[in-house]
Amino acid sequence: MSTHELYTNDPGETVWPVPARGNARFSWEYDGGRERLLALYQKGKDKQWDGAKRIDWDIEVDPYDPLGTPDESLPLHGTRHWAKLTERDRGELRRHYGAWNFSQFLHGEQGAMVCAARIVESVPDLDAKFYSATQTMDEARHAEIFGRFLHEKIGMLYPINDSLQGLLGDTLRDSRWDMPYLGMQVLIEGLALAAFGMIRDTTDKPLPKQILAYVMQDEARHVAFGRMALRDYYKQLSDAELREREEFVIEGCYLMRDRLRGVEVLENFGISRVEAEEFSERSEFLALFRKLLFSRIVPCVKDIGLWGERLQKAYLDMGVFDMGNSNLDLLMSQDEEIAEALDRERFAAEEEQRVAEVAEAIAEGAGA
Image (tube, rainbow, N blue to C red; front, top):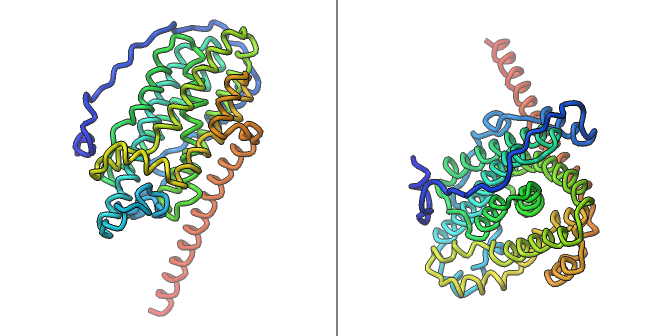
């Protein structure tokens, strides 16, 4: 079935052309490179995996509860509209929110793939080109996986959120080679990691848990790459150049905080945008979610050297300033360990089942 037929709203033209600006840069220096970045490149090669094989696609998914979403997480919960919904209506609402979440993940991963390819083209250093080539493959795999889940398990997609599309467009249109790093690796990927983690750590559904854990294992490397490259580069910039990039970060953070709330879902249930925004603003769960969205961004922004007075004031206003002291390395190592632990549990269970089947077959043969 065509993806176009699965969208809840018409996404418009099939292809979104974004005018590209800036230079493609070749490097004729092939000897060596930064040791840390080359080590990350080696890890990126070693950690490649096949989404068709590592993930157990045979697991059944209830499309009316695809993510194990608690009712309290739905902005409509506790409102006058909630009491009027039948159980079927509530299942349909969970389906829509699952589709909306994974659709934004899908669109964001395609954006990450394009940005990673753009980094290969525009970054001046060959070691960075090498690593971003592995990331381009990672992002292609992620887009493949989220698309498959939406097509096969939920059967519904949402168009890209206007704010996400706007931030992605601004990132790609900028001619400065570091902006795909800043817009994608720090802001969009940082937001995605927090959203992935919140669902990964709360869902009781094995398939989305697998998908998110394995994707986050890759993303831990991507954020490390962005931090290394930008930290080195931003040490060379003037105060004026740093302020320009801080303004970009501030605008992007406010945009994502205020707009990435799934209001489109409630509009599809006949609720006005004004009322939908009001319900989203009141939701305690979404308030916590919006704050956690910045758990990966704020320490990363501080680490790469963007920590001017205006940026700090913005984070104080958002109530996320204290996250600048978070241990980003610890968070990333935990993401990797969770994926590895999930693999160990899955494959140990499969081995136990295989041993039991063999023992059963032997016992049946002995009794024949």
